Image (tube, rainbow, N blue to C red; front, top):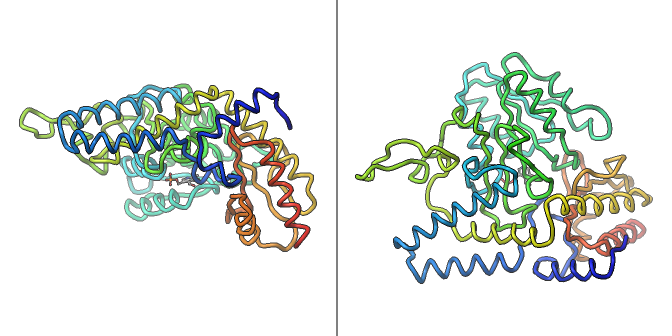
Amino acid sequence: MTGTHSTVTRLEQHRQQFPGLVNKAYFNFGGQGTMPQPALEAIMRAYEKIQQEGPFSAGVNAWIQQEAVATRQAIAQELGTTADTITLTENVTVGCNIALWGMEWQAGDHILLTDCEHPGIIAQVEEISRRFGVKFSTCPVMETLNQGNPAAVIQQHLQPNTRMVVLSHLLWNTGQVLPLPEIVEVCHRHGVKILVDAAQSAGSLPLNLAELGADFYAFTGHKWFCGPAGVGGLYIHPEAFDSLHPSFIGWRGVNLDSTGKPTGWKPDGRRFEVATSAYPLYVGLRWAIATHQQWGTVEQRYTQICQLSAYLWQRLSQLEGVSCLRTSPPEAGLVSFQLTGNISHKSFVDSLEKQGFLLRTLADPDCIRACVHYFTLPAELDRLVEAIEKQLAEG
Ligand SMILES: Cc1ncc(COP(=O)(O)O)c(C=O)c1O
């Protein structure tokens, strides 16, 4: 896999902005992205500004408000929506908690999950079930990775009292992209709300949330957007907004009267923001997003991710002793595979890490996951495949 000389040079220059790419071959973007240096510097400058002009002052407080507005706008633009639909959170898990705890559950209501959800999200549904007498069940989408129709599976598992379906857009274990427009249509036809875990999709798939129509879409800035850990967000569809009530409440979510008393909720996504946060991180996330935009549009980045993941998938598929979970090229940047011999995935990955190749294992299905971003080099993929081949040969 080769590019023209000028594309390669441009990519190499672009990559120099990411200190995390220098001393290793990085394939853990689904865990945490490598932050660009301009984002790191902008965070530092923001902390310094706050100290120089405050830390608590009218000037700093006004500046923080502006930064929050600009951050919701930058995220909204990237995700194809408007800033009023965005709540700033800390991560995916907090966004899911806002949606799950914000519903008015009745005993006997039902929540449908897929069998590919993250443990942090499953634990929320389990506790809601215990607290409110809500039932939940799990439907098998993992088996639709190579054939079958996930939307049909979900439809078959809806019950008369199902009120919410909780699923990931891009499955963190197998790398499958679920057909969200079809699934949203099925859910809404049955009067069911849909909460999407967007941990792997935000920052990697082109998205138009306004068109997609999902009710709640919870994402983070620190994975595929390569922003700082500690800033994420929740999209709430305007038509679903009134069905949610805040669970954690603070001054950021309410309007105040002239005596400083709360007079009612903020009318938009700010309603679910709580109180003081690490605001300089907002600036960092905006710089990270701007860095990707300098390289290309969301569609161009996604095309590049798919070309690179197809290349890795194809090279791994040809290796004796390796079996990719997918039988066709991936639909995004996650490439999951198993070792067919009697080898522990964990010790294999640990050994790769010692050689400078950073990947991770997953428990279900038991596999190894390599993530490629748009700025991954084909040469890095070649080196990874060679390292895997060599390690397999050495046993
Ligand atoms: C599918 C999925 N959901 C949720 C999470 C948790 O993300 P966060 O720490 O941003 O809440 C992850 C992280 O790996 C994930 O892959």
